Amino acid sequence: MTLYLRPLSLLHGPDARRAIAAGGAGALGGSDFIAFTQIQLIERARGSVFKRVITYAEAQRVHGELLDLIEARRPAFAGLAMNRPKLMGIVNVTPDSFSDGGQLANASEAAAHGARLASEGADILDIGGESTRPGSDPVPAEAELARILPVIEALTQQGHYISVDTRKAQVMRQAAVAGARIINDVSALSYDPEAVGTVAALGLPVVLMHAQGDPKTMQNNPVYDDVTLDVFDMLNARIAQCEAAGIPRRLIAVDPGIGFGKTFHHNLTLLNELALFHGLGAVLLVGLSRKAFTGALTGENKAADRVFGSVGGAIQAALNGAHILRIHDVKPTRQALAVALAGADPEAARL
Image (cartoon, rainbow, N blue to C red):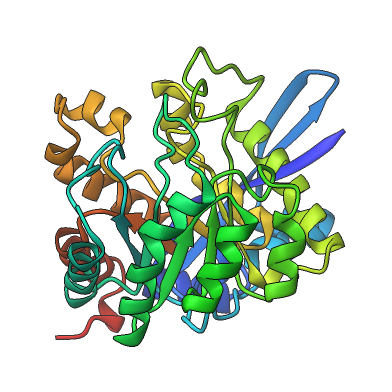
């Protein structure tokens, strides 16, 4: 039997701090402004799932070790404090990404776009040279490197925090030399047999994302027994494999992979049950920007027109304790997040 704890009854700001101080609530993902007072205890055994709600006090008495993973304060990730959500701006140097493929025709345009995102409030710039949209084909490492290395070097020289979005060990190594501080792998280091060892040797933080299947076919009728628990189990297994290879949990972020091998209803379920992933004891990253399920909800067929729906999803993720938000539209997200967090935590608002 496997046990899972999903935090419920979230409190924010002063109410959260008072409840934590009184011992009646836990800190969600190590947050200093989000607390939970109840827990959905989930038991899975032999294909059956049983759920019931218990109090925080009961969970403390019986499931202290699992609670510790949820509540542990997350250390700085690539030097960035995780006490408030950080924004990861997307810079796709590709001809075929689902939202902005081909818009950044060369390295100078891509670097200028990244610098603009940073000026709008992006804490991290995620540079990718291979599209992993549904139906996409792999790109040779040499082509990927030719696209991204000049951009990474230029933005690093400007003092920006750079993440490299890649599945290939060769690209990881050369991107790190060029200045990348984070590895972001949509395959959770499973695509390239050398990836785990490479990240361990580099000593860089890594984002492990869940994806069911290969990008070429991942949207061909994806099926799960329980999407949230299945994604949790996969990420938990990948964390264990990384730790065994010498990558400590403090250097690991997890991403449930919204839109990667999931249906519309799978994506909504993951967003609704996001708090469960704090039980992995790692930084939580959420990327849903401009994805098809936001278009299905808002009626926007063009990815570039899904800004408002994407911002709404980002706020939902942040209020459920996401530490990093991977986004295309930095300025609208930053402004909405400033208002949402001030409303949730007026004591911490800054004029």
